[in-house]
Amino acid sequence: MKRRIWSAMGGALLLLGLRAPAAAARVPTRSLLALPDASSSPRVARGGRAIARVWRGRTLASKADEYARYLDDSGVAKILATRGNLGVTILRREEKGETEFLVMSFWESIEAVRRFAGRDYGKAVILPRDREYLIRVEPNVVHYEVLREEIDR
Image (cartoon, rainbow, N blue to C red):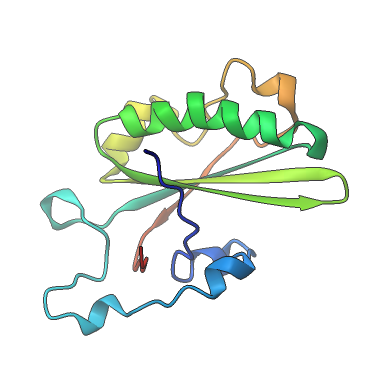
């Protein structure tokens, strides 16, 4: 059974100009730094910091549910199947008849990102049917170093 979790990724959402959904704001969090064996970054091979890869796309609100299913079945499946992936968060918000999707995937290293996206890893991975759904396709992605992540499950 798949579990979908809304998570506020430390200051990353604020840097992106986003707010966590109201439901996520009610979820209690605890500081990773308060735990004796905690790390200030998510699990990463060889002691490095994780990489967050962020992409945005917009669809008509009337196509949003169908696109969300397609994104989950195609894009998320490909992300999760790539060696070196640490997970993925999909954010969605509706505004003025459009729905924006933000895909934030987490990686052990830039090498792992390249395994997913190819040599030109700064470009978005456009899925075969994205143009059927998306009215705005962001051609580039942004990468961040993950400094801290907190999620209560």
